[in-house]
Length: 75
Image 1: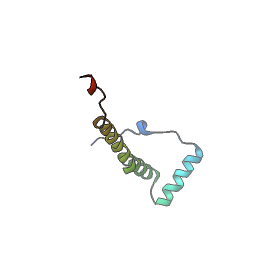
Image 2 (image 1 turned 135 degrees about the vertical axis):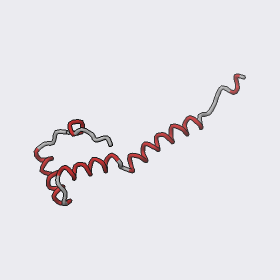
Image 3 (image 1 turned 90 degrees about the vertical axis):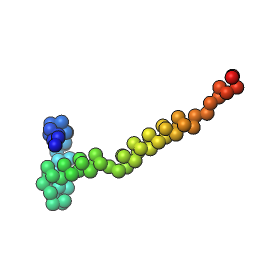
């Protein structure tokens, strides 16, 4: 199992942001590490993001398939 190093995911937070995270973790009944882990994984598995990525692929594929050829008159 691959475990990401904390230093690779660490981001600086202002004091106000840290307080907000601590309050949210407490409200969720979790310790800060568990709360942050769950939040990061939920964001990484966001279904809207996955749908947007799929939409880009679909639109790109359709644009290629629906491209109109205008060179038929030169044959």
